[in-house]
Image (cartoon, rainbow, N blue to C red; front, side, top):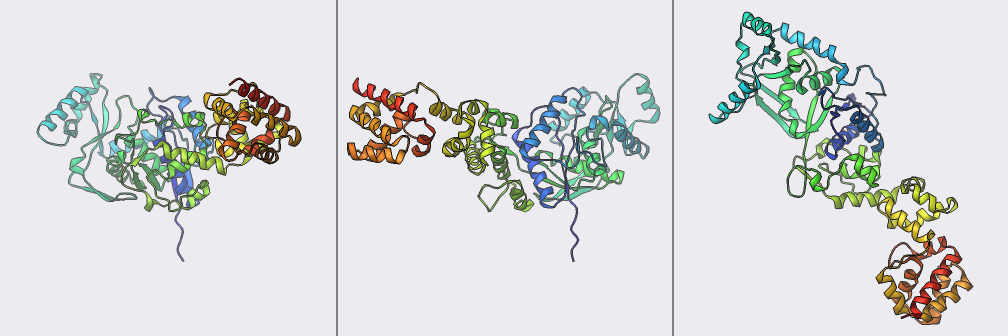
Length: 475
């Protein structure tokens, strides 16, 4: 009998801006893995950058995750045994581990200025060497350290990378990885202002919070050996790391706003449904054999780390729109009614809501499209563009005289009205359908006319046919 291993994943954003597609995909993959394994998805806010971190961005991240349905089981508002979950509140934790590293000689104070570090990097690059800290302050005597402190210099704290070692780990996505410690160089774990560097706080918190699997972007791959060295030095558990592919624009450059990429908030405000965004993101760099629309439990059940690709994923608005249409097709009528917005609800009578949603569902992609159809059905006067006017004129006055007679006999029963017109005019195909659609909706295509006709009041339909009769008479 095999014992099921516990899975805890995390999403650890820095609240320095709105949540964008790349970070949201990382959150989604992490949440799907935890859900699939009946584990825990943890949210941690990495707000140690005091200048750039904003409370409003923390709130925005939480709001976006909730909108996507990516509920966390541990973290802000959810609680847990490993809080606090804002790094700005974990200073005492970090100071404890700074002290341990210093006491054990695994870290040292560094007084090098930015100018000195920049000069050293340029010298190494000119010599064809990888830029890394040359170890200048690692050789300072205790008296030299005291002298610099007495001069008021504010030092950073650097981790002393052990020489002659190879850091190895099996990346969940990219397979075996090897890094020589000689290529890493001693790195900063505490900034001069006393705040922890990303390498440090990120790794410490993952270990202390019991995270078992870390999924993150491939741009963090070179951070991983540093964090493994840190955790080993402190005797803390190392999670399993998986570095997922970047998302690129059509031109092969990293995805940005110039490619049409938008934040999750912007997608939501545009009218995308969360299921559409989730289905799209889930297939950006992850292969699903099932191409059908899946809800979150379905996406989780079929999520497999082995299906995460190493090649970059490419952003494509066409695919996002495909999943938007699929999400609309699958959505419950009540959900769509709310999604269509207050302006639609103000126009469409409440007792006609279900019929309206059913009529236009297949012909709307965003709420603005639903509003267009609500105005077409429930507002006057009806706007007629040039194509509609041309079709109406070509149909002739006799067509609309017969249409008015048919409406008087059959009311808004579209099938009966159509049969009457066919018998009286001999028109068929487009010559039959187009003039009637143009007269009643101002459009030449759209939802099924039988459904729209049922929503039109007989009096509104009569006024529109009468107006078209007058247009035809004026040709």
